[in-house]
Amino acid sequence: MRLDKLLANMGYGTRTEVKKILKGGNVKVNDAAAKDPKQQVDPAKDEVMIFGERVEYREFIYLMMNKPQGVLSATEDASQGTVIDLLEPQDAVFEPFPVGRLDKDTEGLLLLTNDGQLSHQLLSPKKHVTKTYFAVIEGRVTEEDVEIFSQGVDLEDGYHTKPAILKIVKQGDLSDIEVTITEGKYHQVKRMFASVGKRVVYLKRISMGPLPLDEDLELGEYRELTDEEITQLKGGQEEENKKK
Image (cartoon, rainbow, N blue to C red):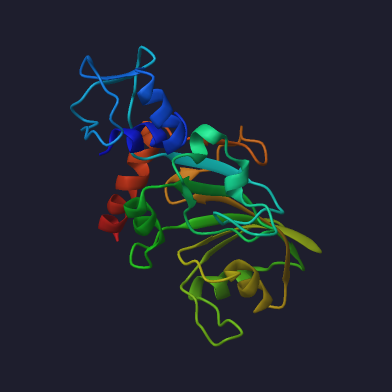
């Protein structure tokens, strides 16, 4: 990897700014002065120092966000705010992207990473990664709905969903429920309830695979995943699939 790319990726400035830092003699590689931005370094083997501090290189970043309503699950948009706009510069420099999407008016757990392999693993239809939502439903959700969801429902376009687990938390004219699905069709939860004559008025994702939403995160806040959580995401689904 080029030295200037490594330093830029780690948030020490743009390529142009990094070149100025190198020209000023503020960088060493294995105790030797390094001024050439094209110098090749191996982050796993070479010791890179900048302003006397060691550069702790890492390739990937893994973030958990409690997504608020009103922002898009996208990396950029010409007219609307995105979840990337909520990131601090030192995290945005890794160029993370949302793993899947939450609708603009949906809140809750959203993972962001620049690890394409993990993203593919979590989104692949073959992996059957579970996603659980809390929702407020306009209309009385019944045990009949629970049974219908357990068999999968027919959406308005004729698609028959995979079975879903529907749990009634509170019954009434406005019903609180939790629903677990293994797919990610467009507006899927809303469309599933529409198929049984009911409307979702509030939706929040509370877990994805083995990872629950951190309840300490306020809307719009995020944090890095712990090593244990990353391991669970990478390995937990494999264990889940073995049990099936």
